[in-house]
Image (cartoon, rainbow, N blue to C red; front, side, top):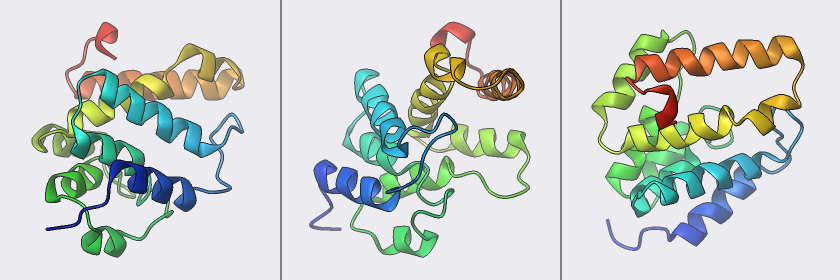
Length: 152
């Protein structure tokens, strides 16, 4: 494919797609996307992975329809990573983790996502029940992905 979107264009598109959305703490959702993209970059990710980080929740959160991704001016690898990290309704965590592990480049994006989601400063503003539920959820996913606690 020629004339793929630049990282700046992908960022602008992701920010526009998630406009008005907030995270569980009430912060603009684009802050999470930026943190995951920067986490991928800091961990040595390439442009395909950084683009996927910007778009990692777009299909899952219905910010962009999956058919948009099919036709988007993105590399096949970026699309594959986005699809790999997109949770599907009713999907067992084991199947989700297996797809991530089977898709080249996807694990790094999920590692950066988990790292930001599990950031103690982010979790601290949530109520105790939500904080406990999410901490357990993230620990379970780290285990399924074969990640040690210190690697995320």
